[in-house]
Image 1: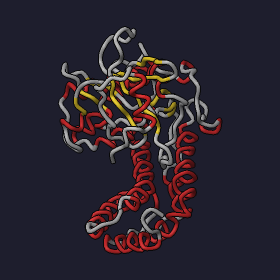
Image 2: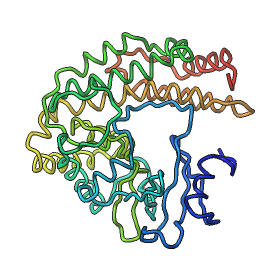
Image 3: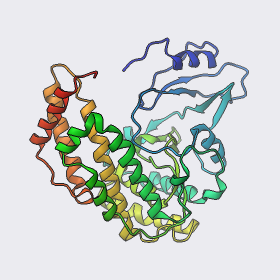
Length: 359
């Protein structure tokens, strides 16, 4: 959706760039309004283009955030994690360098196999993440004390993620989506089942996690170097959770997924022994948590996407099929009896009638 040229983010981009007319944006993105700008001559930044952005207001957050500032984190990781955006401060604004290139997703579609040189670079990233131990990262955090379990407490780590999904995604949206959740068989009992299903994880030493490693957060530059962007969801925790999230979001072909698991385990164990402890037992459970988490976020997103106009019937059909797939994938961890696509469509249509667009 286009933004007015007088938006706060646009005004700030013009100010920071010294009034440059070479401003690109706003870029596509859910959480921020982002512009790509050049910096005025005479600044100490060594050329290139930079991202000037501001958070969008009144957004639903479906993932817990750990660090107060992504820019602070990137500064702290300089020299420790290679090929991440560097940060340049202009007054009170932290600018991230815009990485020139193409997203991995634009080159290799969702579910498509990746070339070996790219896989090798992803493994190097995991190695470097494993080297960042919790006690070495002292920048300011926003997460509560309860969200910082002791090093190695993988069960406590996952419990706090489940707690966030239950409280912030499910319970805080019951007023608007409670009827729809109920029609789809989702309730407090779903979380009881999820906790039972994912219990008894092995202990693993904690490290830094990116927690959002998908194809649109990797950039391939003209030299075929892989860069990692969008560190806003980074956290400290179970390294196997980072692998599970990556596999869930990337959807590698089966053979490449198995190969990635093997390479990952060898790499992280070489940095911090026992980082892959219990992989065979725990990875399927962490993947099941990701599938369960997706149910609650996708129900809300699909409902909000229905909109109005002549194509509503088509959107209802699409949303019904999409949610049927998502619910089916989470049948075991949530203990679901999945309604048909037609019943899901009817539930969405009923929700839409009871909550007018814009209400």
